[in-house]
Image (cartoon, rainbow, N blue to C red):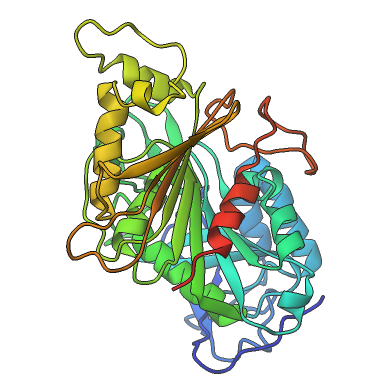
Length: 400
């Protein structure tokens, strides 16, 4: 394994061996051991619980508890020796982690590229990607094309997984704790293995902070260039991160609809939204909120004047700009055959951060995290639009 240069200053090492995890995201209150020497810690090291010695079976226990589709990535980590306790330095390739947050074991995957920017020991950017409803971090690690983007540009990428909730229709699905989560889940259902005292829904803002702490401890991260991306519900949660963690996050980008309600970002940061003009969720939102005399739409309008003549996108425009303390009425646009881009840069009174917001409408794109040509998997939208490429270009221009 190619270990990254160790960093002994500015960061704290916290080594947590999780002996069990309940699929897909939270565990019962399993015992753990805090390792004081992360450089010598081994994922196979036994853990003492009271006076009893527990066999070093925790990697197998974790993998067996995961959803079947997530197991191959963790098996790859186990084979490579990178399914390791929190606080241990990351190595080039795929790394699998468990960190304990509010008594609950949370998992994430980290991709470290074999790129000279990274292996030289220089501080590099970090991007964290949040998946959509009923998905997981392993799915996005495999198929989102962020691996290739990180390999080409020399930054580290993380893919956390959300907890599972029971939705109002009775189905179980992963969800991030975005604003409005309580309106779409059955609040009377709590997983039986939830540790006593743990919050429900889980606190994903705290999880994000702990995840960032762990990655900063295990790799040389430029803390001025930490960015977040998301898809669908994950994109909505990225919006919450932007509102609440703007003092830590440099910029954000998401494939999702902007805010249906206005919030107030504590530290406004640059945000880039992308929406497909064939996104069924967005089309449905427009048609559920038609003004008198308006005909229903079959696609999201590409022309800004037509787009904002509809109540739902116009409300989102206003809420989006107000959330990031920009003037909703001051924006510019560019249009082509394949995309429409709109930009807000004029600050409201008191906003001195120099932030901006972009909103792109992509022709032919449905409700999907778009992947273009030249990736391990073929394009998933007719125009070959590539979200990782656009988003990395956005991230690369923004720093704290």
